[in-house]
Length: 190
Image 1: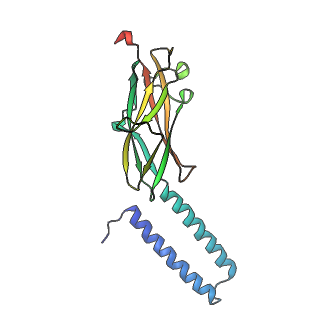
Image 2: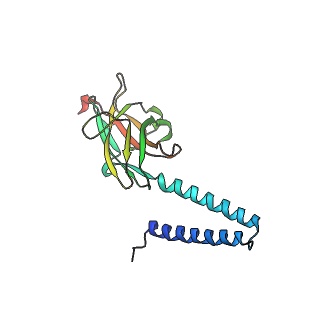
Image 3: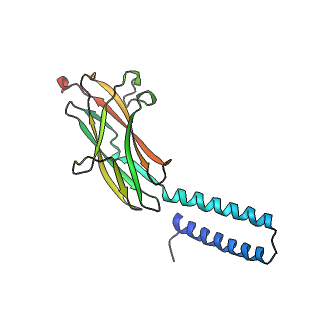
């Protein structure tokens, strides 16, 4: 007997729905069901199947390793170890992106974000090769680095909030994100 997981429960539900659709189709062909009822049922089934396949194929989780989403950055830069999991039902490629979201975040120490600074973010694999996207099989997890550097002339002892995103190329409207909180440390105080 299979364990009761959401995937197994869905498969049972899906099998039952298909069985009912077959019965409805056979009843329609024997003129026991009106064409209006048949058309409504068919539209409902098609919408359900489309929505469910979309939701099953595009699911992911993006997080910072060990939930270390707050760091300080020195003049030479710092890196966050990120992890992405494809929890969908199909292969997917995710385009990586970053956005300074200083006006829409709360600093880790509670200070106002109005004086936050912008930082530069690049991505690399764990071997330090530059990357812009990651391809994953269903259930696969991989780690990558979000590398933070300080633009010349940036004020020290200021925070930055950066949203890291992974946008599916399979389902272009699907993306996952997390926020990094980075303090630009003063090298003279270390």
